Amino acid sequence: CRELPILAPWLFPLEVRESLLRYAGFGATFAIRWLQEKAVDERFAQRRRVAEERLAQAKHIGAPMLLNAAYDSLFQLQGQIARDSEVWVGSLKSELARVARDNVLLQAANAMELTRCSPCSLEVQFEGESGFGRAVTQGFYTLVAHELQRRSTNREVPLWAEDESSLNEEFLTPRRGLLLRPLPPDSPHLVEVERRCCMLGRLMAKAMREGFVVPLPLTPGFFQSLLGGRVDWATGLPQPGDGVVGEFVGACARMVTDVDRGSVGSLEEVAADPEWSRKYMQPPGEEPVAPAPFSVFADAASFLETGAGGAPLCHGGESRNVGVDNLREFVQLAADFWLDNGVRRQMVAFRRGVYDVLGQDASALWAFTAVELRRLLCGEDEVYWTEKELEEHISCGGGYTTTSDQIRWLREEMLEMQQPLRAKFLEFVTSCPRLPPGGLRELRLSVHPDPVVGARLPRSRACVHRLFLPRYVSREELASQLHEAILSSGGHHEHNLPP
Image (cartoon, rainbow, N blue to C red; front, side):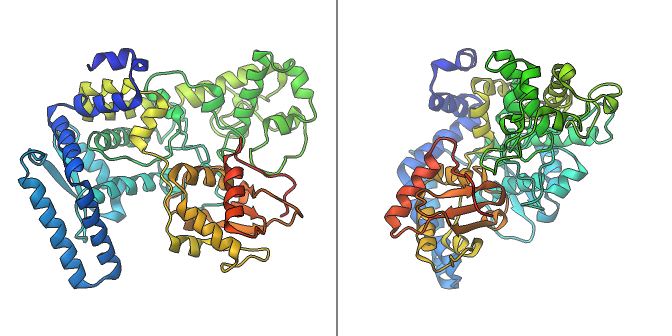
């Protein structure tokens, strides 16, 4: 039952492969734990949910008597579960790590080194805090993910390709996900980057084995590389609109791909098109770029990592100009650097970290596609906000205020949206289906009335995270038009927008 899903994964639905991974992929100890948790959920899920909600409300109110009563109720339920021999076998042996929030990366690396071969589960408690349990341990994995996205952290150890910092100075927030930063073999950072990749592999493997996720917005291409597959140029290289340095490289790769497919003319004909920039450098969901032929961009490009800068792609690359005559060579060298030899040592280190924790059981990961593996290790693109956050962090302009009916209806709709629709809403307004670390506060979302007379659908300006919302006369009309807009093909309705 272990080999067949790896050899022929298409024979098994995703849910079946996930169950096989949980119950047969990590040994008998973790299989018993998963079966026990399933049995407990079937019998006690509703009562446990009520007890946890009661505790959360007591914490919010802050009344000591209510808090003590809520804790007593939860502990009594846990005792009842432990005494139920039909569902409870026993607790999995765990190792406790006490971690300081302000030094979490170093201590996470130490914890992974000390427990990498351990068959026990990892439980984390933050220094100076009394909280414990699965929620706190998941908070540890989330905090590490956020720290790895911190811009200052990445400048010290360049793990990810840099993005534009105009909207978020503190964290990296590329719209399509984090791309591994390719490094030349003589980079002084490479050894430390390898160490961090190995730590990340251990962290993600341990989290997945024990039912947690590390919510890093990695691209599917990262996991395609982990599985040893070839990453397609069109999806692996930075593309216009990703907000990542090197978008010119991706535009050139798409141009060469279009020519090879026969969907356009020759390279010379495509390059001479005065509308080339609008076909290949146009970020989706943003204002149209100025029309220009290929030469306007190529004249400023060399055989460098991003075309404009970075490591040379070949000997003397900084002095070789990019042109139609050598475009294929430029694209091939750039793709090799970004997707193969420039990230090979990083991926080997990450894969080594995964095997450090899972051993031969790591082969079970090959039963999944890159997209499925991303979901298993990084989790769903969960979008979470509260009524208070919506009130505090959505700014208004153009005549709208926080008390305008349209803004109030919008907040109500956003609260009622299910997760998939919330992700699509964010993609419609910001071109990214994930919230950045820090949530709505870091997103800087603004809402303005649409000045276009007779406008029916909401529109967006993704580059500044602005939603243009017509002055609807009812919440029902707003909900209908908003849903139509964000579910439409392409996700954006942005044409001739006001500033």
